[in-house]
Length: 71
Image 1 (cartoon, helix red, strand yellow):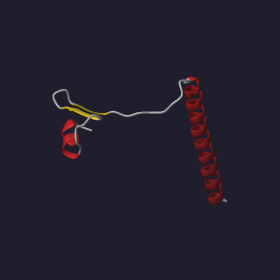
Image 2 (cartoon, rainbow, N blue to C red):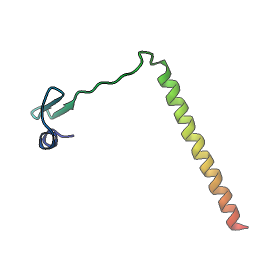
Image 3 (cartoon, one colour):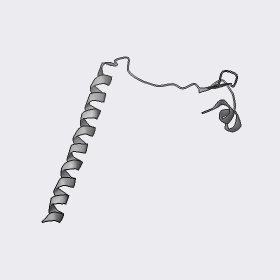
Image 4 (cartoon, rainbow, N blue to C red):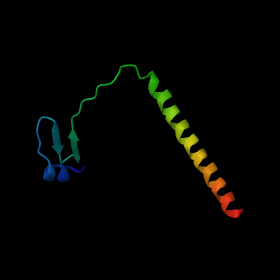
């Protein structure tokens, strides 16, 4: 979000910093996460495989539907 838009719709406080001269509008946030990041790569790989598999299933269904219309 641009600093101008942030200033128009938001209020600067301890969590929101707006620096228009630097073109920065930032909001501080907190995340609760594990220090063990070894699983991130595995999770992304699994997600990518699931998307690939899902797309292959959709291609197969489209091919089968096309054959049904031809017959």
